[in-house]
Amino acid sequence: METYNYNDFKEAGIDVEFVQDNQSSSHKGVLRGLHFQINYPQDKLVRVVNGEVFDVAVDLREGSETYGKWFGVVLSAENKKQFFIPKGFAHGFLVLSEHAEFVYKCSDFYHPNDEGGLIWNDPDIGVEWPIPEGMELSFSDKDTKWGSFKEYRK
Image (cartoon, rainbow, N blue to C red; front, side):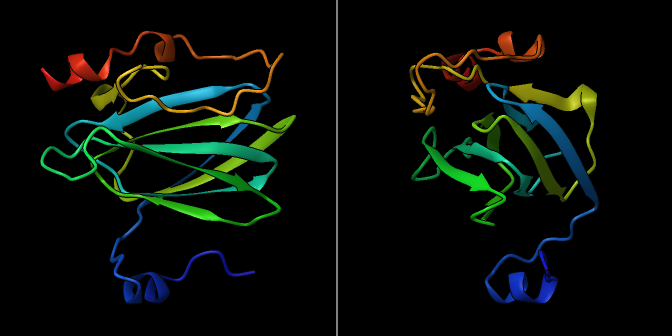
């Protein structure tokens, strides 16, 4: 099964050179994000090869008609959807299945000292995470310490 073809994406108006592929493994209730790189922004192409996640992008491009708005999509091994996230967006996901393998292509390398983020439950962004009753959420330490969208805009 072909999962990426540069020519097909270019024909669709997405002319991006990906330089790094990553894969992460997470369990149900893991919520990552909302992440972005400040000085080394990345285009990302994400997909799930095992399990199911709710994937979110938040527009951080000042002047954009959708600035501060979010979009979410369910990605799963079953639906085989991919989600392209352009530079200038924050990104996060919630694992909905017992286990998920998440694969993403990036247009720039990961720079750990350049990472920025927004708190996952910022009321000004208002992401409607599909958290089933009884699901216990799990966060990394850094993901509990990100600031608000208002703080980001200052």
